[in-house]
Image 1 (cartoon, helix red, strand yellow):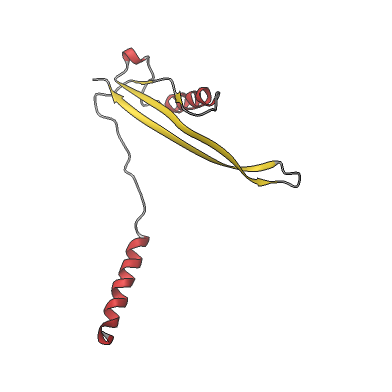
Image 2 (cartoon, one colour):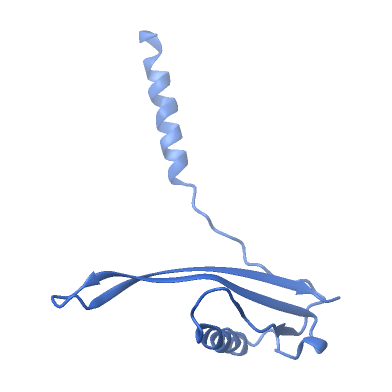
Length: 119
């Protein structure tokens, strides 16, 4: 065993260096060729944040309009429909000033996205 210690070190070094190269780099997702027009289904909220759905819907709609690749149309005319469900919205204060007023928050959001191909 003493004679093969260099093999153990080499294997350990290879394992450590291999772990450093593992980064999640997703490839760009492109919709199928038959998808030309999209619709946004009204956002479903499973949290207590009442106005969150309206604000999120406006932001998502603005992002699609700014991108311009897929026009937004009513669901009846759409090739694909995007369903958004906000399952959890938790805004937790993590830093306070001298008078115990929150100045920094941690935001946890769990969102379920579903894309339905209508063709």
